[in-house]
Image (cartoon, rainbow, N blue to C red; front, top):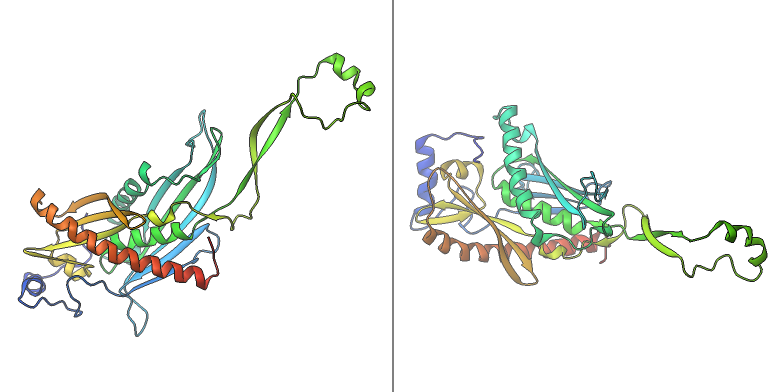
Length: 330
């Protein structure tokens, strides 16, 4: 879904588009076609969450205003598994995107809700995929597990909201700490009435703490960490990033502003996950009134891989800096 937050005249659209395809491509802010606006990242922005982050793309350096800003927060909830309970054995990831009315002042309430639903569906489809499922959301197999709630709030939208959403999600999931748990076992013995009557006679011969021949099953758990402590989520480095390739035939560009999005409404969303330095195309979606053929897609995917590598490397460096700043360790 496009974000019809601003409208441009035909001459304005033509002026912006002509800058992309000129012999020396130009943009209003002076950037090259393959360069992002400044990206600002901070983790730990929601003190009561298990993991959180704030990302801003394009903040003004002189007054620290503007830009596309997203706040992401993770919260872990214990769920029962089996029966009529909604819990899933091994845990599950639930994503939800909310759009602030201040971010879209020209849209009606219903339009904002529709936009939030579209963003939620896309993020949930990607991050909730089994190939990205964290291995440490199980508590007691078949009985209890963690539900990982990831909430994202769009504070402001100055273009390229999809890339910002996935950067914020990646950062909050990196910051997430899963509390360590310890199973509690209830011991069930096979005592008979005669055994109970003879207890006084044998208590001096046999310790009452002897647990041999007893069946023990884990039916509950206790936290060994406080709610805001724990271990980092396993595989946190593989959470994906999104690269939005905006099409201005015969060329393309990244990190569009609102005016650029209005001038060139066609874009290809490419989502890449990472396993060490190997990247995998996790999802793809084309947006716009026209169509995109397979030859064009095959040309754009390698370009998206290059942009994703650069974006991912910069994001990881900043996250490690944030860990050091907050003295957080693996």
